[in-house]
Every structure is written in C-alpha cells, then in structure tokens.
Image (tube, rainbow, N blue to C red; front, side, top):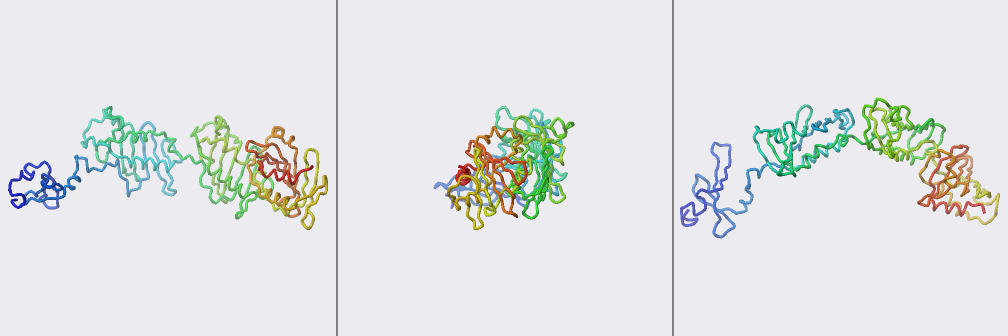
Length: 487
C-alpha cells in the first residue's frame, strides 16, 4: 500500500466503504469479490482491490463504462427468442381469435379455428417476426404473485401461443395500457412469470382481423398445366398443350396463340381475393353460383388443379367466385374477370407468314380493289383503281400484321358496331392465303379510335362467322391505309 501511494489507509483510494462491488460466482464454494475505488490522480484509471487479498491495483476507467447502470441493464430485452427453434402452431386468443397450423406435407399454413381455410403463411410469419423483434421497454415485476385483474390480465385482453406440436414454446398475455404511459402495453410472459412493458404497436398487431391472415391467392400453383376448359353461358372452349404448342380442340380445332395461353394462366394465377362474403353459404343462388355464368378449369393430365366458378357482381367492382374444392365464397376484382377470354376466337393464333398471303381484297367506302401476288413475288392490281405499288412496303406491312399482339374482346351485341364507328370508317381488308397456310382467309374490319389513338377492329377467320373484337395499333393502321386502300 505504501508503494501505491505512501499510505495504508483504504479511504485514500476510495475503497473504504466502497459503493461498487463486483462479485464473481465460481464453481468453488468461495466467490471472488472486487471493490472498486476512486480515480487515480492522473485520471484515466481507477483503484481496485480483491477482498481478502493484499494490494491495491489500478485499471483503465473504460471498464467502469461496461458496468450495468441498473439491475435490468444486462437483461435480454427481446420479447421472446425462437432462434434455432421452429414452430408449427399459432394461437391468438381475444376478440379476433384464430388457430393456424403448418401442414407437414406441404409446409403451408392452414387455419383450423374458427374455420378450416387456407392461411397466409408469410403474414403469419411476419406477425411472429415483428413480435420477436419487439424490445422490452421496462421490466415491471418478476414476482409470480401479482393482482392481474387491474392490469387487464385476468382475463388477458389478447393472448399469443406459439407451439411445436402440443408443446407450447411461447405464451404471451397482453393487458392494459398504463394511464401514465399510453405508448406502452403490459405483457405477461408466462415462461418467466414476469411483467414487462412493450410498445403499444405490439398489442395492436394482436388485434388484427382474421381476414388479415387468410390466404388471398385464389388459385394454387398451375405448374404443369396441360389443359384449360372455359365455359361462358352455353359456350365452351377446350384447349390442350402438347409440348410447347397449344391447340383449341373445342368447339372447333385451330392453333392457339402460345403467348395468350401463357397470359391466361398468369391471369388465373394472379387472381386475388379481396373479400370473404360467406364461408358457409346455404343458398348459392343468392350469389349466382348455383348456375355460374363463367367457369375455368385447369388440368395437369387427368388431375384438376383448380376449378373457378364466377357468379353475380358484388357491388360495382367485384364479382363472387368459388373454388371447386372449397365451400367458401370469395370476391375478386370484376375487372380481372373481364380480362379473361370467353370464346375460342379470343385464343386463336393470329400470326402468319407474310409470304403465304397471295391476295388482298380491299373494301373502302363503297370502293373495291384487289391486289394479287405474282408467282415471282411482285404485287399487281387485278381489280379497282390502278397505280404504282411498292412491293417492299406491302411485304413489310404484311410482316407487321402477321406479328401483331393486342387485347381481344367479345362482341356481345352486333349493334355495338354502330357505336364503335365501323360503318363510319367503312374499311375492310381481307387476306387470302395459299393452300396449306395457317388460314384460308383473315378479314379485318376497322372501326373508330380509342383515347390512346388505337383502333378497334374485327377479325374473322376462314369461314367462321364469329368475329373477335381487338385493339389494333394506331401506328400500324397508318401503314395499312398507305398500302391497302381503295382510291
């Protein structure tokens, strides 16, 4: 001691009645106790001694900053910790109760209470992750004996149970919000029998409605699809896939546009449930589902992946829909249904090779003109007004017509043609093909322009009288006017 400061008085080192004691428990019977004293005269260090041993030592004062400020300083402030442990059951009790389990075969979540239904696994796991990342703001008490009723914990306002099989891993009870701390809510952790305060947002998560945790994807995975069946009223369509090629086989046989079939499957896969009107319907007629107006069936071989039945409109922007393998009635956006095809011609492959076109018949405002391709490939006027023809321009326009992609619609009422200005435009172009081509003929009838300057057009294939209404690119029509007019 004399060497450390010229005195053997502990008070000179701030060690007499030291306020800070560090006790280390060991495997032996005797703990190790250190007394921490005052700062050294030069600063940046402090004095300490080991109780029961001679000598006073110095250490860097940075050690003092690592000491806990309060009894709770070193406590884990995570609300719970499931790291390294998996759970397959979640129970929420309270005003919006539900139970969901993870199915072992599919790894998908499914509601079991208050009803059996598909659950939204990502949302369930997001809820658990949000609660697991919640930090404890304060530890209220660790006593197992607490008057719970004034705290809103007898019974609890809401309760969360996470389990693996029948074993409960986490059990939390949420109570009241303290009047002097409205930004927090009381939580009882039954594993530790302690009360803590956490941000009130954690309590709000526990009160989310059941619909928030239901699976809103209407259709399952459609991977491996080999057949699509469509029914709209009395009209039926059946398309099958062989390799990468799609063919419509009912009500007639022709090649289907592979891009349109891919888009159809994508549209069906993307249908979202926006409302849950009835999970135990007693009267399907009330929803127009006793005789559905539209139906789509998707198959992989002989296995039906999904069957969707659409009924009445639900309000102005939704439509009732039901899956063939579920009892619940859902609502999905009406606009999505209106984008789906109704008749076979909406799926027809319109692509053609420009070199297969041998004749173009033009009708425009009562005038007619016919262009024919000579064996050597040159174009000539065979009927109507004569004039110079640009073979390269005609062939380029034919090429672009053979590659056109556009949105297709159903013409429900021929009277709509007047409203769409077909008689006013009065321009029809018929393409005739050489034998063995994609078509015998395609007849295009042009109507008025829409707000984005595209035209509405009618297409008729071969001898089929059922037209398809589609949106025709406005820029391409300028080329049609240049090359296929009847002056």
